[in-house]
Image (cartoon, rainbow, N blue to C red; front, side, top):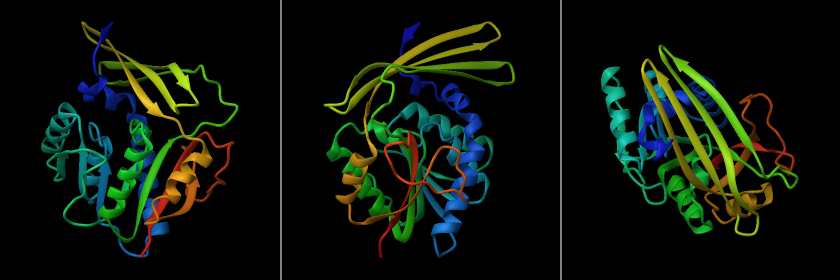
Length: 258
C-alpha cells in the first residue's frame, strides 16, 4: 500500500462517494426553494474536489463555480465537463481566500471538507469569504460531522462502490484524537480493482473537531450569517432537527443577512 494523496486520484475518490450525489443534489435544490425568496441560478462549491456535484448541478442547468486546491482534481473536473459538454467556472483556489467577482445565489459544501480548516481563524475566514460571495438572502449549505460528548473515539468505516469493471473500497480509520486541541487524524485507505489493476493507497488527513456548541460559537463570530435550520445526512427537507449534542452529522442552512 502506497502512502499517497488520495485526492490525486479524483476518479476513484469520486466513485467512492458517487451514491450520495443525487441525494445531495436534490437536497440542494430543495433547500434553495425553501430558504431563498428568489430564483436560484448561480451556485458556488468551495472545496469541490473532483466535482461530482459541480457536474451534477451544471447538468441540471445551474451556472456553477467550483474551486479547490488540488490541481489533479481540478484537471479531472475540467475533463469531465468537457466530455459532457457542460460549462462551469473551475478555479484552483483556497477556501480561506477566494471570492468570485460576481455574487452567487447559493453555495454548498456538503461532506466534511470544511473540517480540513484546522484552526478557528481559518474556519472563520472561510465563512466570511462565502458570505462575501453570496447575494443578500443567499444560503450556504454546510455539512460535516459533529462530535457528541459520548462519541466513540476509535472508529472504523468501510464501504465499496462499483462502476463498470472498476470497484473501489474505502476504509476510514481514526488514528489520533484530541479533544483539547480539537484535532483528529483520519487515515483514508483506498483500494481500486479494475481488470489487472490492483491499486492500494492511503492518506492521513487532519480534521478540526466540532461539538454543537463549538460551531455555534464560531458562527456567532460571523454576523453576516444567520442559522436557519439544521438537518442530518438523510437530507429530508421536511424534517429539520434541533441542534444538540446528540446530533452526529449535521447539514447547516446558513443565510446571508441583508
